[in-house]
Image (tube, rainbow, N blue to C red; front, side, top):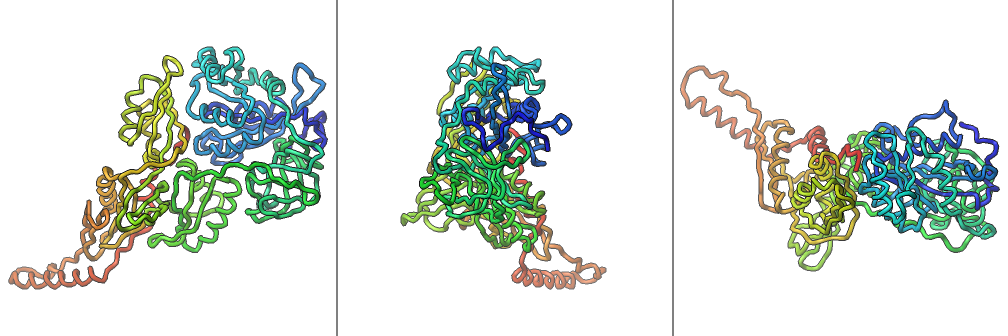
Length: 622
């Protein structure tokens, strides 16, 4: 563990006037983690021999994919160049950039007074840059605009500084220019943070109030809770109380991240740190909750976070049914690490016991499934992702449908589907292909703005179901990889939606059902029955594979029976003898068809379900 330089003040006695809490926000791949690396090196909290690229990205998946999934808080000592006598404490949070992890960003912003808005000097402003900027403005944070990667040959710092200044409402000269890779300009940026970001405001002598903005599960130490102290002080070995659950615990350890855990005597106003109570029950520590002292504690909790709304639902089932308890425990622990995860148990006739899990998007789904398989050693099947529909029947009753098998039978009056407001940023030469793609996905144009002569921002209302699969991949291929996409939910609209059922030998297979638009139902049915014909092994009897809407069959394929050659022993002789043998075989097949049931092999489920959502998996960047 790196040693903290001796001039760093003791955590429990830091003057709030010397504290600066800030985070770094940007579009994916604009250099947040690299900038954080340089800050760790410059402030000396990580020794040179222990340094590695993307130091704060702790998970294997983050390092492999080169994306930040989890925001990380770290405490940095910094003496600004204009006054070396005063060492300030900078609490920095490195945040994810992908649209699926916006909830992580919003929680980080609530724990800060300022933010660094980072833009790639070669790519300019992108969709997620705008989305994160608006989030920061909603939180009334001080925004420091910064252009990164100015060392690249393709960088256009003057052009993008103007764009950025126009967006924020400052002068182009106020935009800092840095290179996180070489370290150029990073010292000036840290000085700017000290100068511009306001110090935290809180009442030192008031009852302690600290907000939980993150938590993780450690198999040795139990739940580790990350907090930002607003008022008062939390001290080691005192008893604390969680205000939403009323649970009380003893503080076994309290301290800060520098960037490894460093225990201290306590945390004061404005400080960011961690608490360990030895609790193993993951439900005891809730993100957004307020921590106070048990004796003479605060009466009024701090305002929490808005609960995230899952956008996409998918069923997760263990390949081996006996792994169900392990899957439940794994989801419990992951939910602590990822507050945006919601789930509930469900059963499927075809797949057995599992969970219906809500995600913020397809990358989120992909990451959670991979983490469950890697970190907990589970083998899982995920059903095709789908969104939440609201179905109103003719008699006025309402149904919320998160799974196609819940779609009601009977007379339906209206079906409502969720819609999103999508913002697409791209070079202006691609406007035609973007509009064509959005029209085919049932989109409605809201408007467009030119950020500069070459770059345009297009806004569309689109059904969420149309963009969760392969919309992003299509957008990238039509714009040669230049377009970026961001979306936010805006409500719902009525639509002509139907449920397509897949029938094997006349029996519905719930795992293959899907809700789709009337115009696309036929294509979906034809594609799936053709795929199942290839994947399901031939039986001793003929098996019809049908796609149906209600009682109307819209597509059919037949899996031919395996037949024994009963005529092999006949050589020459009367035709009537051969006919008699064939008739006997036909009767046997008929009898078998009445009692036979089709066993769908596990591989067929995996192949169909994974190929249906493969369009969404592996989307690294938006």
